[in-house]
Length: 459
Image 1 (cartoon, rainbow, N blue to C red):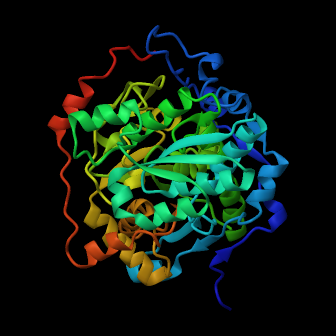
Image 2: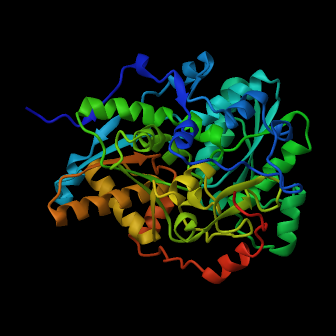
Image 3: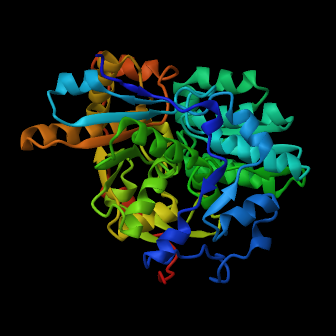
């Protein structure tokens, strides 16, 4: 009898509520730190966020409820592609000759090709309900911008996207995808905002960063009453929306009759990995599955979790956001223009950062060539060309599987495959033809960026 390798849920098994990890963190003695007002150093109150976000999202950002109901109109859109499939990667296992069982939760089956619509749909819905006309945002590789453009189209909103210039030039088809849904896309830094003009004045050839693009998007929202800001990662409400991934994956792993020993995902800001990991992390925090491991993977060119500092820092370059407690390379840090554009962010989600700091998550950083070697092997065995970002998770999982082989140990590995790489073929061409440089992380540049951190004690 053929062994089952795909585990699907029925359409009526889409989660009807999002899962909030914060109560479980508090229950385990991990007290989240509040965002701070940069001027006063006091905790940010909801009214200070009102110029950027609708009230419903602000309430979710600070919620202490474990479950938050998903609105019917959001579920209606989710049904276009959810539940997403869980696969067992038996062909990859055979190639690696490992006793490990490797599973991957595939978010590339969404209309935009990644996990990002899970929160884009929710954010567009809540902004439409609040009477907003336009949403402004940033995007790195373009997956988030693509998702928000699609979501705004569904709910009749205008969409303005500031796309990091390195990715704007590397990935023209992502721009075209966004424009197909009616979005306006500007390369960042741009001459259309004060934040962009300042950067271009100091660095005319700047390839941009997510921190810069965030500054531009926030500036537009803050100076236009009909426009709200939308963020694709990092904040509590974003990771909350993404937990549909992990909630589905828990049910699917039960169908497979196994429980993960290690859960692996890529981290830029942390939304896709938090979305997969948090429903499983609850078991570790409660003592139900204390031995379960969690591995966050990132690019060696932007190693926030492995070489950053846990500190209060701005989420953007122009210092327009509240101060967030997170692992950071400094808000002035501009990562090298590696192909994994969605992971080129100077900081990480506060909740995820705190779980790393408290030892509940591990972190590892990989070079571009290590990552694409894993991506090509995955494509050749499983038939899916992964996004460069997602390939970091595959690299981590392959390393875990090889370690299991060398130790002669059985292990169950769950990967968050956050998106496909159909718009990233230039990156694959560079790798296959030996043109992919190994980008060195410059500690001196990091020290310069960290020197600008606000001197605010944690706790």
